Length: 218
Image 1: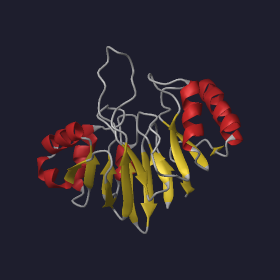
Image 2: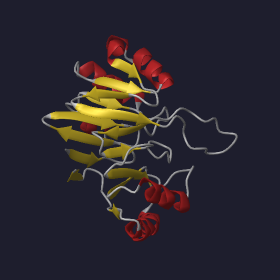
Image 3: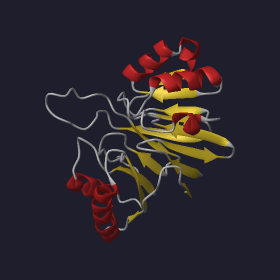
Image 4: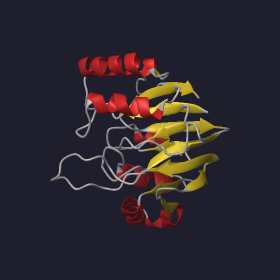
């Protein structure tokens, strides 16, 4: 399958002429990512992971598009696009289902802590075809499953370099690519990714930078 990274946390998977998208948020190229897609997965409710208005437009223009999201987000999408309400499904931890020809497994239950005064929201991580793990805004490690590829949130108000590296080490995937990096400049990217490449390599994970719009075959 082909994985395409878009700005920030949005990624698209293409296989056998079908496509699945995760987290088309406000920083991302939503229309481009969702063009012709049949499935949409949302990890959590924050706007940088879900641009409701632009996803609503995608639903209205694509009768083949279905979505899976945590309960609050699913309700929000049904309200925003009532004509597509029957195509919006609630995602919970420990599920397995098929979406656009991809096998999807769900892990985790909540967003990483930003601050005790900031409410914690539901967060679902997704494993695609048993191969690629998108954790959303958390460092949940998929229990009972080894993945070949992990998408790594490299910069956020809720993380630090130590946690980024520990997540890479804990997952022990063969490959790692960045997500959640729209808020960091080139200097910061070089520091974080330099550590990820060097230390990840010690534990068998090859970390590679991807620019928005860049694709790799998995």
